[in-house]
Amino acid sequence: MKRLLFICLTVLCVLPVSAQKFALIDMEYILKNIPGYEMTNEQLNQASEKWQAEVEALQQEAQNMYKKYQSDLVFLSAEMKSQREEEIVKKEQEAADLKRQYFGPEGELYKKRQSLMQPIQDEIYNAVKEISEEQGYQVVVDRASAMSIIFASPKIDISDEVLAKLGYSK
Image 1 (cartoon, rainbow, N blue to C red):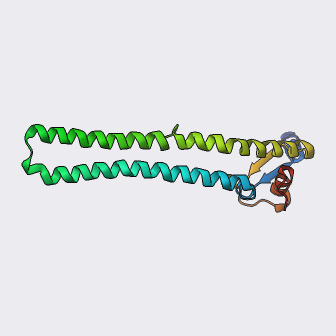
Image 2: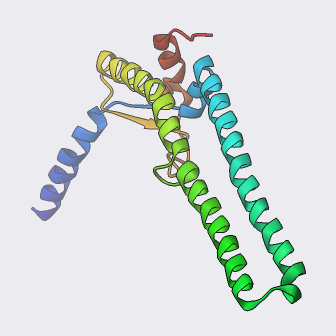
Image 3: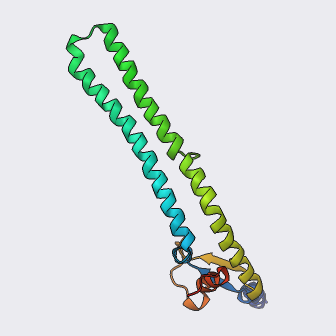
């Protein structure tokens, strides 16, 4: 009796799982084949380099102030030493604040990336959703970010279908 109950429960658990359809996409592959993504990346890189140069200029200025302070140290009074030290600390803080403003968690680079990438990501999401609804997929997994996938059949990869839906077919 227990054996029969175990078999029935096993069958009931396996049947719903076997009826589900799965698909994979490779987000990296999809993004590499969208020309707008490359242009967006280039814009982000240019902005990042420009902002990094500004931060580095302030950091260099602080270093130069410190070197000058070190060389003038013997000639400075206690009051002048403290004044120079405050100026150096202020300049270093200014560089750190600018770096946080540009590259922090809610910084300019993050905001710019969101504003430029969100439309592309939304477009891909909508294409995946349409394909999933048309073909009856219950789950679509991103192969690029799913570290736990050891093997997946290329037959269930719908990346090229997504690109075709977006108008970037090969």
